[in-house]
Image (cartoon, rainbow, N blue to C red; front, side, top):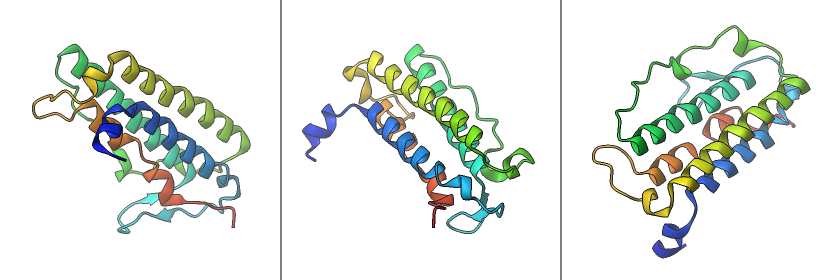
Length: 156
């Protein structure tokens, strides 16, 4: 892809594609054996519920960042525990109902993020924002299925 093509690519679509990947992997997590998996680097563990929680929290955090940048106000400081903690809820069995709930939640959230970037307009996507990332850089950052890849495809 050329620089010109990249500059005309809608960054929100990357977020929606990442969510599709997360949900594709999540469809295999019904088979999860209940054992948390170590993330790359071996420092943190992931379970299906933790992946869904962290992916959703990551989208929420950076959507709030985008809104603050567009409004010209400071971003609220991050107070998440993030991946450092694994909650009791993170260790629960992952069922078909959980998959449906995650699908609805993540699809709507990523679509809202994508539409927000569309509404901001192309002129805003790459506009420098001082020490902060551009909107495209934020989309590139959250437009990854990294959390889900830590758990991976459990169908085999």
